[in-house]
Amino acid sequence: MTDSLISSAYSQALEVIASVEPRIAEATRQELADQRGSLKLIASENYASPAVLMTMGTWFSDKYAEGTVGHRFYAGCQNVDTVESLAAEHARELFGAPYAYVQPHSGIDANLVAFWSILANKVESPYLEKLQAKNVNELSEADWETLRHEFGNQRLLGMSLDAGGHLTHGFRPNISGKMFHQQQYGTDPETGLLDYDAVAAKAREFKPLVLVAGYSAYPRRVNFAKMREIADEVGAVLMVDMAHFAGLVAGKVFTGEENPVPYAHLTTTTTHKSLRGPRGGMVLAQEEFAADVDRGCPMVLGGPLSHVMAAKAVAFAEARTPDFQAYAQRIADNAKSLADGFLTRGANLVTGGTDNHIVLLDVSSFGLTGRQAESALLDAGVVTNRNSVPADPNGAWYTSGIRLGTPALTTRGFGHDEFDTVAELIVDVLSNTEAGTTKAGGPSKASYVLGDGVADRVTKQSAEMLDKHPLYPGLVLS
Ligand code: DSN
Image (cartoon, rainbow, N blue to C red):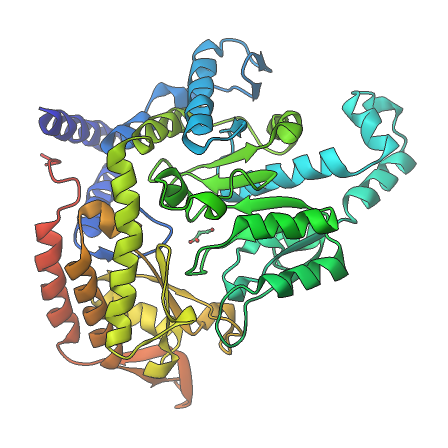
C-alpha cells in the first residue's frame, strides 16, 4: 500500500513538473537512476526516507517566518510555530539537549549561529550591552568601531583541515579563519590520532575563546570529556561540530564520553548526513547560550525554511526508533568491514583503520593523487570524494586521499560481505589505474589511464550488489 502510494505520488509529481519544465523532470528521473546504479560512498551523503523527502515538497516553502516561535516578524505563522516547536522538541529528546535551534539552513549556518552566540554571550563590552538593550541609535561610529574590534579580535582553536577538521573550524580562507585569530591543532604525525596532550598544550599557550572539536574526515572517535577539560582549563567555550556523526550519537553508538552533547556548551550539526534527514543544520545548546542562539534569525540567518524544519521533525521521529539505532550500529560495523577489506589487501589507511563511519584511504601507494583516484573510481561507478591526508604533499585540490563513508550503502542494506567486496573493487580499480601525463608530457596530478575492461568488470560486480539492495525498493516511476 505505502509503496504504491509513494510510486503514484512521485509519478504524478513528475508529470506536474514536466508540464512546466520537462528538462527538470527528466533530470530528476535521471538522478534517481544514477543514484540507484552507483556505489555511493561519499561519507557525508545518505538517502532520506520518502516521508522526509515528501515533507520538503509542500507549501510550507511559501511562508516567511523570521523570528522565533511566538515572536515572528511576519503574521500568519501559527502552523510554522507548530512545526518548529515539534522539530525542536524531538531534537531535545533525541539528543538529551537542554535547547535546540532547528532553523539553520546548513552546517556552515549552524556554525555561524554558534559563533555569534559565543561572541554575544562572552565578549564583555559596554557597547554590546547597549546593542542588546536595543539602544542601537546610541552607538556612535566610534562605538561601532570599538565593537567591531572587540568582536573581531577573539581567538579560535580548531582541528586543521588536513588532519580531518572542517573549513568552518578556522581554516584561513574560510570566514571562520578571518573573523577569528585562529590556530589549528593537528594529529600525531606517527599515528594520525588526536593527541589530547598536544591540544591542551596549544590551548594553554593560545588561550582561545572558542575550542572547536569535531571533524569531517577523521576516521576515529573523539573523547569529548577530555576536550571539555581542556576548554575549562583555559576558560574556553567548547563547540562541537557533530555534523558527520550525529546519526551515531542519535543511534546511541557514541555514548558516554564519545557523546558530545552533555560536554559541549554548543553542539552544531547538519541533519542530512549519518542522521539521514533533510538537507539542513541545527544548534544544540546549554541553557546559558539559548537566548543568543535564538537570535540566530535575523542576526545571522535569513528566514527559516519551514518545509525543511518540518522534514527535520519527521527525520528526528524516525531517528528515535530502535530500527534507527540498529542502522547506526551497522554504519560503524560496516566501516570496520570496509577498513579490514582494505588492510587485508595491503592498502594504507590514515590512522590504520576506523571506529566511526569514515575510512580515509591514502592512495599514494598506488602512485595516484586523490583526484586521479576519484576520477578512475567514478568511471567504474564508485562515487567517492578526494580528501587531504595529514600533511598532504598534494594540497587540498589534488590531495593524496579518498574519503569513504558507509551511511548511504548501509541504508540500502549493504552488510559485512558487501563492504568487503567494495574494498576489493576499489583496490581493483586503483591497482589498474596509472597516473597520466600533461599535454607537454610531464607528470600530471589530474589525468589518469584506467586499464582496459576494468570499469566494465567492476560495474558488473557492483550491479549484482546494487540489484540485491535496491534504493527505494517500492518506488516505481510510471
Ligand atoms: N560537505 C561536507 C562533507 O562532505 O563533509 C562538509 O561540509
